[in-house]
Image (cartoon, rainbow over all chains, first blue to last red; front, side):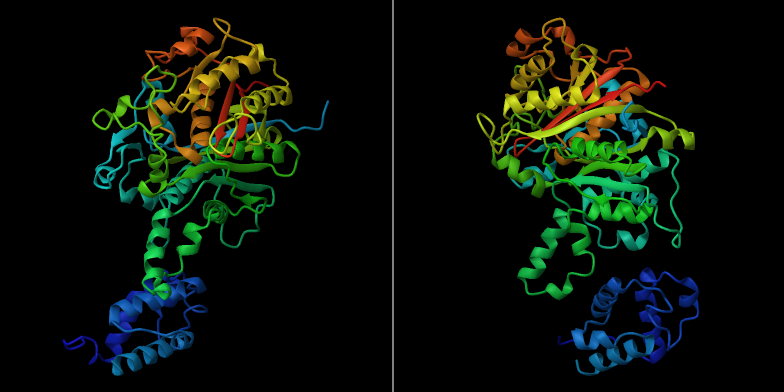
Length: 93
Length: 427
């Protein structure tokens, strides 16, 4: 893409806010969502159905215009891990 | 006395081309309201037959049955119809939805059939796979396109711990599901089973039939006239879609719960003509049809003379004459002695895998409310049918009479048959 990628200069807070919006439809534990922090675990704390993790990853791909390979996806267990993956994919764009 | 348990119907649900719920459907079939309409999409796709029976509701309606997450990427119309009809029937039977941590309900099951599920979802998946984008399919392709997706979905919503399965026998699927549930409850293996069937809408389901040239193509401007079972001018079946659902329960369980009882299932039979003689992949062997009806009566302990009305398969092809002939032989009744007979397909078309369950809901409503609905579009009764049975047997207006025992039959590709005997409930 020739145009300037829109998310390359996001702060961590902005990334976190985007991620929160993406995962919200899949969350089954609303208290966990309200208390969202870096160490929040998608499955344990938010009770996201494990099958839905692939949908979260696809939504992340669409939102940030990146591609997340299987290896990177396996690392996306917590909020912190996910932000790290997103940042690294954005940086290598 | 045998150890057979008596089996009754305690809940109904339906999503049909002429009614989105049981009360709308009940009114529509008594008034003879057609649900068949022209569909521009079929014109664009150059179908010969551009009319169909398709349930019609707004997307908002799904919020009553599916969570926002469940609706994400939902592209399986048959799943929508089946879940709506199934949950409606469950609520109608005053059965509860379980909490997440409840034990499975070991005595309750789901037998919900279909011919093919989630074709639109499958189409999307095929495009993505062919483009090398398999990793973009998401998590819901399998659950929306596996045939048992519908029973799995309902089983989970209802917390059922007994049988949870999907049967498939073409156009006899729905009637077969009812009999599978009946058998299991009659034998004491379950107390309550949600039985029914569903069929997707759309060109990918109906296209194959259009290609076989067995759909009417001269009624694109006059859709409500197109489905003409038993008529001299019948020219093929109008494709339809939707779902029907019945809560089937042991009388014992229903009485213990104080449940409303719509009707009793006396018994029935399923069989196949083995694709021998005139039977084939697409045509029934008459001997097998007669055998199926005869066995259904025998198994129900009913004499042919006790049948007050028949809800036929009667799709509006030349086979209608053969079907009437088979009923006259199986019951040994003809002329003025023949029971009333009707075909719901005159109003909704042929809902394929869903036809047996939707038509059974209609049949049970007749017993419960006391009427025999009229047939549309057969004022010109086929002359060969008129030779077999009296005109009076084929009402063209709804009759306000209370049938006591009604036979319902469905026949499907593969030369398979199903016949069930329903009775007005009395203690």
